[in-house]
Image 1 (cartoon, one colour):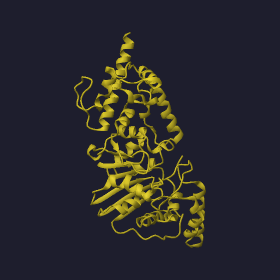
Image 2 (cartoon, rainbow, N blue to C red; image 1 turned 45 degrees about the vertical axis):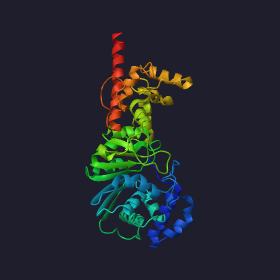
Image 3 (cartoon, rainbow, N blue to C red; image 1 turned 45 degrees about the horizontal axis):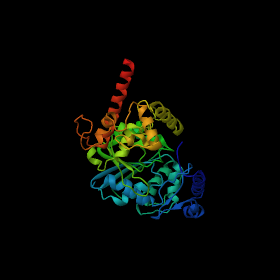
Image 4 (spheres, rainbow, N blue to C red; image 1 turned 60 degrees about the vertical axis):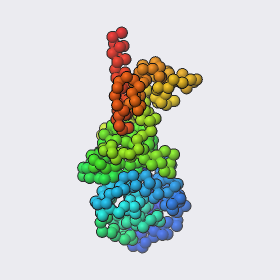
Length: 398
């Protein structure tokens, strides 16, 4: 299921534009006056909508401000020559508008991917929060004109050196058609994984790895464990993005560890590496709907819990290495650990598993601390599987 703005808003917009095409009269100001109460005005003056699932498209802090802080600055700062960006789920066009306002690159190419033509049409109605948004409107107008959904172009042409290419369709079908290792940055701005996991699967993230330059950076606002796990499984180094407008920071990822400057929090590393919460979404055929993808992950979590992964209940992996685990929580932690063969939260098995996170070896292995979050996650996961396999061998021998 594609998540798009509310259906009543999209229908009203498309009806007005159909009348505009029929009469060759610009009716967009009238339309805005009639539907502006359906929009939410954010703190920076930009407007946002809620989706059919009830999730807001942007934070109340402001779409443009959030785009600059979470997507643009962390990915393209310092690029002065040709800049190439893939804007996924481009929506009302704010991320690209923020990019154009911020960058001083000599030339800019943006591939904007949006599944809903109605959302593009809605972007034409919304008052532009900055001058660059009018350039985005022009690109959307060109696409809608080419599809016969519009008859009037009211926006100025793009300045020399700026090329905006619009793709309307499921990103899972569009990305395989794009040039490999082409982009300096990818803005992954889909709705959250809990309601729209289609663009957070291992398979889709692997497609993105193929079109991003080796030193390119992928940015997304979400910090969800299954999404970060998918990035790691697809070969990315992963770190924290800026905290802005939301309770937690987003995520930055690159094939080059030098491009990820702030590692994940140790708690996030551990939950991704060791618990069933770190099992990613999967979509082998790149065609499943949200319910199927979530159902597949739910089954995989249930199968792994207590077998190859530690239960995520009460965030059990975070207590590994702790000598003080008391009360009801302590009993649950010990029970969850015992199911996978760890008898003591501070025993040798526990210390062996979490040693990669420590500045100095605590288990006697003598290995250096892995340099990146990705490497620490992989090392802890390997050590957990070492213990699981030893337990299975012991059970067979017994």
